[in-house]
Image (cartoon, rainbow, N blue to C red; front, top):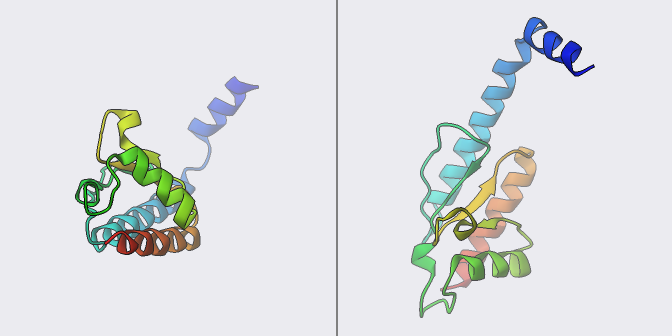
Length: 122
């Protein structure tokens, strides 16, 4: 069964690829641009993958009482109901990982919640 599926995947229509690629680029650009408009967050645009690794380093310290990216993501989930993964789980302390492999509607809600949460820290 898996061999037949692989043959069909290679020989079948590839028309959906351009459409899906465009949708993911739009989502990626939306998330990166939204995150970069949040004071204290900075995010580079990845060339691949379905997630970004924004920095939250400027939001950590005495002023916010959040010392680590783990504390940041815990509070983001608790206060804003947005689930992300701390960057330290990937060796990137001071960052967090957020996937954009979901609908644009959900991403808009998440970006609004992240923005509100970050603004509440100051």
